[in-house]
Image 1 (cartoon, one colour):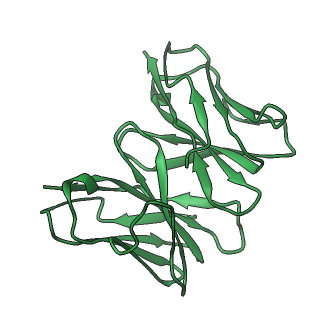
Image 2 (cartoon, each protein chain N blue to C red):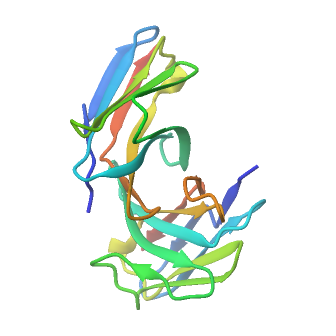
Length: 116
Length: 111
């Protein structure tokens, strides 16, 4: 149990286009989901906290108009990278916090984004 | 901001040896967690140790926590080539459930 999926697992897009990444909790409800970015050989950096039914909370330095987050249901959060640039190329990982179990976060397998 | 620092950044050992990784943090925490990440893959949760615990075991893993020194260690005993991965510590501060990750240790276990 407690599986989190991400789709797509990898995507290549051209500069200026937008890309949507989905994060789903498959067998549990997640009021809160987190989006991280990871550059090669580096650690995970929290981008934003996504709460179902409300606006996401963005970390300092993360542009909310560029990284649009929607958490419309208890099992789905989406991250849309708008007007993508090559420097947005990265590994994006989501995690989902099982509702009522604040210690339990489950990570998705990640999405590799390459912007050409 | 990253509050966790891990050392060593990279560790290369022979199969069968033990691997020890350390993590330090700066603020009060609710718990500390260790994760494993294979290259280009997602994170796998290994073990969680609460702030009122000092040591925890899970299979070949042993985690210690010293809140007075704000540090933790992860020991992998009798390492295997399949243990080759990056290992991250992550802290959950008392104020909420967001995780702050350390910079990670790249472990290579040579067969």
